[in-house]
Image (cartoon, rainbow, N blue to C red; front, side, top):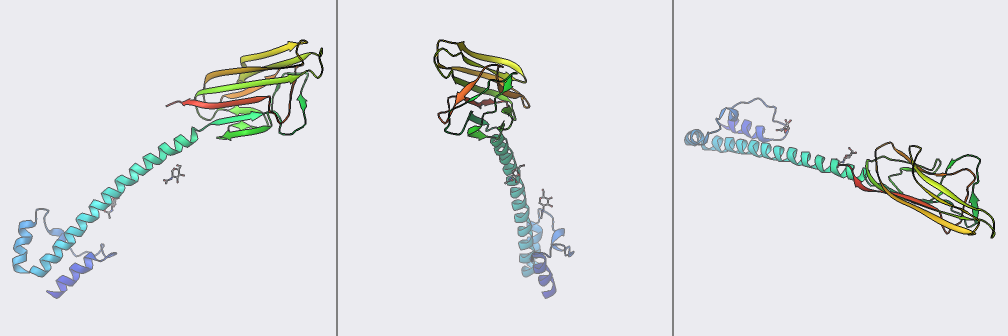
Length: 228
Ligand SMILES: *[C@@H]1O[C@H](CO)[C@@H](O)[C@H](O)[C@H]1NC(C)=O
Ligand SMILES: *[C@@H]1O[C@H](CO)[C@@H](O)[C@H](O)[C@H]1NC(C)=O
């Protein structure tokens, strides 16, 4: 009798579940009546077997619950990771320094490499190339403000920039005259962009932009609506 009880308790002990004593396992699921009758024979071992059965039931319950919770956590994490990836916003300007200086004129159309970064969430804007590579598809809000200073009255002012996607002009801005010594232009559009699209601002040949830490020349974009 004592041996039976001892084996029963060993079965309950952690790490002993591989023990191959099959006594309690053979008890049918509807064992209430049979164990009840077993209790008449041997009350102590019956209580032990009930304990083993209850432990197993709880093990299964907690295991199932844990598995479900892990699945839910995984789903929530995937949503969170996707949401983090969709946080794309950048805003840059031409120069960081205090010295007023001009960018251009150049002999060819040139992509403007804006050097001062206000924000570059998602790191989609590349300061070395001036190109914003779309990482997350969706509807983007884009804006470009261009400014120049002719230096003195009567000189030609030449603000000529264009917003381009994959080298195709989307919208342009132009202030080419001798009437204003300084002037600025703005482009603001909403565009549906796909992953891999390359967005940049091009300075037309012969034109030039001037700036300092006042940040008169800016280029900004942010994801307005992510594709589902
Ligand atoms: C817990 O559940 C998992 C997945 O359903 C299963 O693979 C594993 O064997 C279970 N473990 C126990 C101790 O029941
Ligand atoms: C969430 O998912 C990311 C990417 O798959 C993974 O690196 C990270 O460990 C996960 N975090 C949790 C809490 O599961």
